[in-house]
Length: 327
Image (cartoon, rainbow, N blue to C red):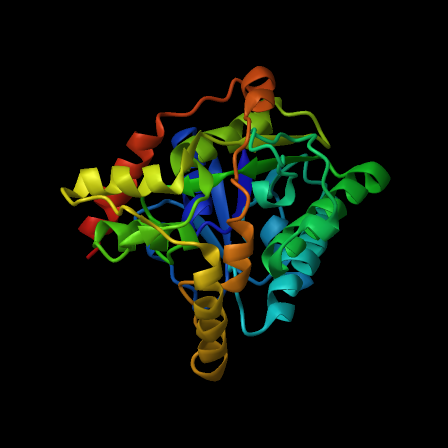
Protein backbone atom coordinates (compact mmCIF):
# COMPACT_ATOMS: atom_id res chain seq x y z
CA UNK A 1 0.00 0.00 0.00
CA UNK A 2 1.30 3.45 -0.96
CA UNK A 3 0.40 6.21 1.48
CA UNK A 4 0.85 9.98 1.28
CA UNK A 5 1.64 11.70 4.58
CA UNK A 6 1.58 15.48 4.87
CA UNK A 7 3.41 17.10 7.77
CA UNK A 8 5.93 14.26 7.99
CA UNK A 9 8.77 16.74 8.48
CA UNK A 10 7.03 17.85 11.67
CA UNK A 11 6.27 16.37 15.06
CA UNK A 12 3.13 14.21 14.81
CA UNK A 13 3.53 13.62 11.08
CA UNK A 14 6.99 12.10 11.47
CA UNK A 15 5.67 9.72 14.12
CA UNK A 16 2.87 8.64 11.78
CA UNK A 17 5.31 8.13 8.90
CA UNK A 18 7.65 6.05 11.05
CA UNK A 19 4.84 3.79 12.22
CA UNK A 20 3.53 3.31 8.69
CA UNK A 21 7.01 2.29 7.55
CA UNK A 22 7.25 -0.15 10.46
CA UNK A 23 3.95 -1.69 9.33
CA UNK A 24 5.31 -2.23 5.81
CA UNK A 25 3.64 0.62 3.93
CA UNK A 26 5.29 2.49 1.09
CA UNK A 27 5.38 6.06 2.33
CA UNK A 28 5.46 9.21 0.24
CA UNK A 29 5.68 12.52 2.08
CA UNK A 30 4.67 15.99 0.93
CA UNK A 31 7.35 18.54 1.82
CA UNK A 32 7.81 22.16 0.90
CA UNK A 33 11.01 23.04 -0.99
CA UNK A 34 13.63 24.13 1.52
CA UNK A 35 11.78 22.69 4.53
CA UNK A 36 13.62 21.35 7.59
CA UNK A 37 13.87 17.61 6.92
CA UNK A 38 15.77 16.41 9.97
CA UNK A 39 12.78 14.26 11.00
CA UNK A 40 13.04 12.37 7.71
CA UNK A 41 16.72 11.45 8.10
CA UNK A 42 17.23 7.71 7.85
CA UNK A 43 13.66 7.04 6.73
CA UNK A 44 12.98 5.14 3.50
CA UNK A 45 10.38 7.59 2.24
CA UNK A 46 9.79 9.17 -1.13
CA UNK A 47 9.73 12.96 -0.93
CA UNK A 48 7.23 14.76 -3.15
CA UNK A 49 7.97 18.46 -3.11
CA UNK A 50 4.88 20.62 -3.08
CA UNK A 51 2.67 23.01 -1.20
CA UNK A 52 -0.93 22.92 0.01
CA UNK A 53 -1.54 26.08 -2.02
CA UNK A 54 -0.37 24.42 -5.25
CA UNK A 55 -3.07 22.08 -6.60
CA UNK A 56 -0.84 20.59 -9.30
CA UNK A 57 1.79 19.58 -6.71
CA UNK A 58 -0.92 17.88 -4.63
CA UNK A 59 -2.17 15.93 -7.63
CA UNK A 60 1.36 14.73 -8.37
CA UNK A 61 1.92 13.71 -4.77
CA UNK A 62 -1.35 11.77 -4.59
CA UNK A 63 -0.83 9.87 -7.84
CA UNK A 64 -0.91 6.13 -7.12
CA UNK A 65 -1.64 6.58 -3.38
CA UNK A 66 -4.35 4.43 -1.87
CA UNK A 67 -4.43 6.39 1.39
CA UNK A 68 -3.81 9.89 2.70
CA UNK A 69 -2.83 11.00 6.20
CA UNK A 70 -3.22 14.78 6.28
CA UNK A 71 -1.24 15.71 9.39
CA UNK A 72 0.25 19.02 8.27
CA UNK A 73 -0.95 22.21 9.96
CA UNK A 74 0.31 25.66 10.78
CA UNK A 75 0.26 25.42 14.59
CA UNK A 76 0.91 28.79 16.20
CA UNK A 77 -1.00 30.57 18.96
CA UNK A 78 0.09 33.93 17.56
CA UNK A 79 1.21 35.09 14.14
CA UNK A 80 2.04 38.40 12.56
CA UNK A 81 0.14 37.29 9.45
CA UNK A 82 -3.01 35.38 10.50
CA UNK A 83 -4.22 35.15 6.91
CA UNK A 84 -1.31 32.79 6.14
CA UNK A 85 -2.42 30.41 8.87
CA UNK A 86 -6.02 30.42 7.64
CA UNK A 87 -4.87 29.81 4.06
CA UNK A 88 -2.76 26.80 5.06
CA UNK A 89 -5.16 25.18 7.50
CA UNK A 90 -8.52 25.88 5.83
CA UNK A 91 -7.99 26.49 2.13
CA UNK A 92 -5.04 24.10 1.90
CA UNK A 93 -6.98 21.30 3.57
CA UNK A 94 -9.97 21.74 1.26
CA UNK A 95 -7.75 21.78 -1.81
CA UNK A 96 -5.94 18.61 -0.71
CA UNK A 97 -9.22 16.81 -0.03
CA UNK A 98 -10.57 17.79 -3.43
CA UNK A 99 -7.37 16.46 -5.01
CA UNK A 100 -7.78 13.20 -3.04
CA UNK A 101 -11.34 12.83 -4.36
CA UNK A 102 -10.14 13.40 -7.91
CA UNK A 103 -7.32 10.86 -7.44
CA UNK A 104 -9.70 8.20 -6.12
CA UNK A 105 -7.93 7.89 -2.76
CA UNK A 106 -9.65 5.07 -0.89
CA UNK A 107 -9.16 6.28 2.68
CA UNK A 108 -8.27 9.59 4.36
CA UNK A 109 -7.31 10.32 7.96
CA UNK A 110 -7.44 14.02 8.78
CA UNK A 111 -5.55 15.25 11.84
CA UNK A 112 -7.58 17.91 13.60
CA UNK A 113 -7.18 18.87 17.28
CA UNK A 114 -9.10 18.90 20.54
CA UNK A 115 -8.89 22.68 20.06
CA UNK A 116 -12.01 22.33 17.88
CA UNK A 117 -14.06 20.58 20.57
CA UNK A 118 -16.26 21.90 23.35
CA UNK A 119 -14.93 22.31 26.89
CA UNK A 120 -17.27 21.69 29.80
CA UNK A 121 -17.66 24.59 32.20
CA UNK A 122 -17.66 22.31 35.27
CA UNK A 123 -14.11 21.07 34.60
CA UNK A 124 -15.14 17.53 33.66
CA UNK A 125 -13.62 16.09 30.46
CA UNK A 126 -15.17 17.01 27.13
CA UNK A 127 -15.76 14.54 24.32
CA UNK A 128 -16.59 14.51 20.63
CA UNK A 129 -20.21 15.47 21.30
CA UNK A 130 -19.68 18.34 23.75
CA UNK A 131 -21.55 21.33 22.22
CA UNK A 132 -19.33 23.91 20.52
CA UNK A 133 -19.61 26.70 17.96
CA UNK A 134 -17.20 28.86 15.98
CA UNK A 135 -17.83 31.64 18.51
CA UNK A 136 -16.18 29.44 21.18
CA UNK A 137 -12.92 29.29 19.24
CA UNK A 138 -10.24 31.55 20.76
CA UNK A 139 -7.58 32.71 18.34
CA UNK A 140 -6.86 32.18 14.68
CA UNK A 141 -5.40 28.65 15.10
CA UNK A 142 -8.52 27.28 16.77
CA UNK A 143 -10.79 29.00 14.26
CA UNK A 144 -8.79 27.64 11.35
CA UNK A 145 -8.93 24.05 12.59
CA UNK A 146 -12.65 24.34 13.39
CA UNK A 147 -13.39 25.61 9.87
CA UNK A 148 -11.16 22.95 8.32
CA UNK A 149 -13.13 20.25 10.16
CA UNK A 150 -16.42 21.69 8.94
CA UNK A 151 -15.00 21.56 5.43
CA UNK A 152 -14.17 17.88 5.87
CA UNK A 153 -17.70 17.21 7.16
CA UNK A 154 -19.17 18.93 4.10
CA UNK A 155 -17.05 16.90 1.66
CA UNK A 156 -17.90 13.65 3.46
CA UNK A 157 -21.63 14.41 3.30
CA UNK A 158 -21.83 15.92 -0.18
CA UNK A 159 -18.94 14.46 -2.18
CA UNK A 160 -18.33 11.06 -0.57
CA UNK A 161 -14.91 11.89 0.84
CA UNK A 162 -13.80 8.69 2.67
CA UNK A 163 -12.38 10.58 5.65
CA UNK A 164 -12.04 9.87 9.35
CA UNK A 165 -11.11 12.72 11.70
CA UNK A 166 -8.78 12.33 14.67
CA UNK A 167 -8.45 14.94 17.41
CA UNK A 168 -5.15 14.60 19.29
CA UNK A 169 -5.00 16.33 22.68
CA UNK A 170 -1.53 17.61 23.66
CA UNK A 171 1.13 15.37 22.08
CA UNK A 172 4.60 15.39 23.60
CA UNK A 173 7.70 13.28 23.10
CA UNK A 174 10.72 12.99 20.80
CA UNK A 175 11.36 14.85 17.52
CA UNK A 176 9.51 18.05 18.44
CA UNK A 177 12.05 19.99 16.43
CA UNK A 178 10.18 23.27 15.97
CA UNK A 179 9.16 22.97 18.89
CA UNK A 180 5.39 23.16 19.41
CA UNK A 181 4.05 25.61 22.05
CA UNK A 182 3.80 22.74 24.56
CA UNK A 183 7.26 21.54 23.61
CA UNK A 184 8.64 24.98 24.41
CA UNK A 185 7.09 24.76 27.87
CA UNK A 186 8.70 21.36 28.49
CA UNK A 187 12.08 22.53 27.18
CA UNK A 188 12.04 25.71 29.26
CA UNK A 189 10.76 23.98 32.39
CA UNK A 190 13.51 21.37 32.10
CA UNK A 191 16.04 24.22 31.92
CA UNK A 192 14.58 25.86 35.04
CA UNK A 193 13.18 28.84 33.14
CA UNK A 194 9.57 28.55 34.36
CA UNK A 195 9.47 29.62 38.02
CA UNK A 196 5.66 29.97 38.28
CA UNK A 197 2.41 28.74 36.74
CA UNK A 198 -1.24 29.62 36.19
CA UNK A 199 -4.22 27.52 37.20
CA UNK A 200 -4.92 25.50 34.09
CA UNK A 201 -4.64 21.95 32.84
CA UNK A 202 -3.92 19.86 29.74
CA UNK A 203 -4.52 16.35 28.49
CA UNK A 204 -1.03 14.93 27.93
CA UNK A 205 -0.38 12.11 25.45
CA UNK A 206 2.74 10.52 23.98
CA UNK A 207 3.22 11.38 20.31
CA UNK A 208 3.78 7.71 19.44
CA UNK A 209 0.41 6.80 20.99
CA UNK A 210 -1.17 9.49 18.82
CA UNK A 211 0.51 7.96 15.77
CA UNK A 212 -0.84 4.53 16.71
CA UNK A 213 -4.29 6.11 17.04
CA UNK A 214 -4.00 7.42 13.48
CA UNK A 215 -3.44 3.92 12.14
CA UNK A 216 -6.31 2.54 14.22
CA UNK A 217 -8.58 5.23 12.80
CA UNK A 218 -7.44 4.26 9.31
CA UNK A 219 -8.13 0.58 9.95
CA UNK A 220 -11.26 0.71 12.11
CA UNK A 221 -12.69 4.21 12.12
CA UNK A 222 -16.13 5.06 10.76
CA UNK A 223 -16.19 7.46 7.80
CA UNK A 224 -17.27 10.94 8.90
CA UNK A 225 -16.70 10.20 12.60
CA UNK A 226 -14.18 11.95 14.86
CA UNK A 227 -12.05 10.35 17.57
CA UNK A 228 -10.18 12.01 20.44
CA UNK A 229 -6.64 10.64 20.78
CA UNK A 230 -5.73 11.69 24.29
CA UNK A 231 -3.94 10.59 27.42
CA UNK A 232 -4.06 11.85 31.00
CA UNK A 233 -5.61 15.05 32.34
CA UNK A 234 -3.07 16.94 34.43
CA UNK A 235 -2.94 20.36 36.07
CA UNK A 236 -0.11 22.53 34.75
CA UNK A 237 1.29 22.64 38.28
CA UNK A 238 1.61 18.84 38.26
CA UNK A 239 3.13 18.78 34.76
CA UNK A 240 5.82 21.26 35.82
CA UNK A 241 6.33 19.36 39.06
CA UNK A 242 6.96 16.09 37.22
CA UNK A 243 9.40 17.78 34.84
CA UNK A 244 11.24 19.26 37.84
CA UNK A 245 11.43 15.81 39.44
CA UNK A 246 12.82 14.30 36.24
CA UNK A 247 15.49 17.03 36.09
CA UNK A 248 16.36 17.01 39.79
CA UNK A 249 15.01 20.54 40.30
CA UNK A 250 12.63 22.09 42.79
CA UNK A 251 9.14 22.46 41.32
CA UNK A 252 7.66 25.95 40.90
CA UNK A 253 5.44 26.90 43.83
CA UNK A 254 4.14 30.31 42.79
CA UNK A 255 0.69 30.51 41.19
CA UNK A 256 0.27 33.69 39.16
CA UNK A 257 -3.09 35.34 38.50
CA UNK A 258 -3.77 35.77 34.78
CA UNK A 259 -4.56 39.45 35.23
CA UNK A 260 -0.86 40.08 35.88
CA UNK A 261 0.16 38.27 32.70
CA UNK A 262 -2.17 39.88 30.16
CA UNK A 263 -0.07 43.07 29.91
CA UNK A 264 3.04 40.92 29.42
CA UNK A 265 1.31 38.97 26.66
CA UNK A 266 0.15 42.15 24.92
CA UNK A 267 3.59 43.77 25.10
CA UNK A 268 5.24 40.55 23.88
CA UNK A 269 2.93 40.43 20.87
CA UNK A 270 3.53 44.07 20.01
CA UNK A 271 7.29 43.56 20.22
CA UNK A 272 7.09 40.45 18.04
CA UNK A 273 5.04 42.33 15.46
CA UNK A 274 7.64 45.11 15.34
CA UNK A 275 10.65 42.80 15.16
CA UNK A 276 11.10 39.36 13.62
CA UNK A 277 7.55 38.09 14.04
CA UNK A 278 8.55 35.05 16.13
CA UNK A 279 5.77 33.66 18.32
CA UNK A 280 6.03 35.12 21.87
CA UNK A 281 6.35 32.85 24.88
CA UNK A 282 3.24 34.46 26.42
CA UNK A 283 0.29 35.38 24.19
CA UNK A 284 -3.06 36.96 24.96
CA UNK A 285 -4.96 34.14 23.25
CA UNK A 286 -2.92 31.55 25.12
CA UNK A 287 -3.89 33.17 28.41
CA UNK A 288 -7.55 33.26 27.39
CA UNK A 289 -7.40 29.57 26.50
CA UNK A 290 -5.85 28.73 29.87
CA UNK A 291 -8.96 29.96 31.69
CA UNK A 292 -10.51 26.56 30.95
CA UNK A 293 -8.82 23.24 31.64
CA UNK A 294 -8.30 21.33 28.39
CA UNK A 295 -9.48 17.97 29.77
CA UNK A 296 -10.85 15.35 27.37
CA UNK A 297 -12.19 11.80 27.31
CA UNK A 298 -10.83 9.30 24.75
CA UNK A 299 -13.56 6.76 25.51
CA UNK A 300 -14.92 6.60 21.95
CA UNK A 301 -11.46 5.81 20.54
CA UNK A 302 -10.94 3.14 23.19
CA UNK A 303 -14.30 1.50 22.52
CA UNK A 304 -14.42 1.73 18.72
CA UNK A 305 -10.75 1.65 17.73
CA UNK A 306 -9.02 -0.22 20.55
CA UNK A 307 -6.95 2.88 21.29
CA UNK A 308 -4.69 2.94 24.36
CA UNK A 309 -2.11 5.32 25.81
CA UNK A 310 0.83 5.07 28.20
CA UNK A 311 1.07 7.02 31.49
CA UNK A 312 1.70 10.75 31.12
CA UNK A 313 4.87 10.53 33.21
CA UNK A 314 6.42 8.27 30.54
CA UNK A 315 5.52 10.77 27.83
CA UNK A 316 7.03 13.61 29.88
CA UNK A 317 10.18 11.58 30.53
CA UNK A 318 10.63 10.87 26.81
CA UNK A 319 10.09 14.54 25.95
CA UNK A 320 12.54 15.79 28.59
CA UNK A 321 15.15 13.22 27.54
CA UNK A 322 14.87 14.22 23.88
CA UNK A 323 15.21 17.95 24.58
CA UNK A 324 18.21 17.30 26.83
CA UNK A 325 19.88 15.22 24.12
CA UNK A 326 19.33 18.00 21.58
CA UNK A 327 20.89 20.78 23.67
